[in-house]
Image (cartoon, rainbow, N blue to C red; front, side, top):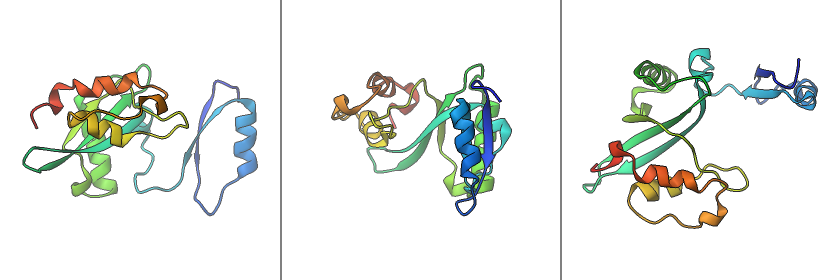
Length: 155
């Protein structure tokens, strides 16, 4: 194992060989922990994506839709087949009610300086409201991208 390796470690919250994971990290390799969530690790979906962000968007009439943004892994492209696989995985792992109305590619997902996703700021920007506290974001430029997504306009 080298520092350029990435390993997928299947674990549960009740059982974890922490020394093995810590040793892997000490070498410098990346560890992807799967903790038994309802969406099982599907290699065809998991390795295509780097990150995701799911938000709700409201129309002027109060209608709500769920929008899922996917950030693609290097060397992978956003294609209708991927959208279908993600939707099928959500439907199979959760329910048809959990399947997002709209799945879009994003170039970046905003995070705070301490590494938390900023869903609320994205929701505000999409609704045409000003985002607050840009200084708390590690990548504030990503919010501007969400402001101009054509698929989100006019809902």
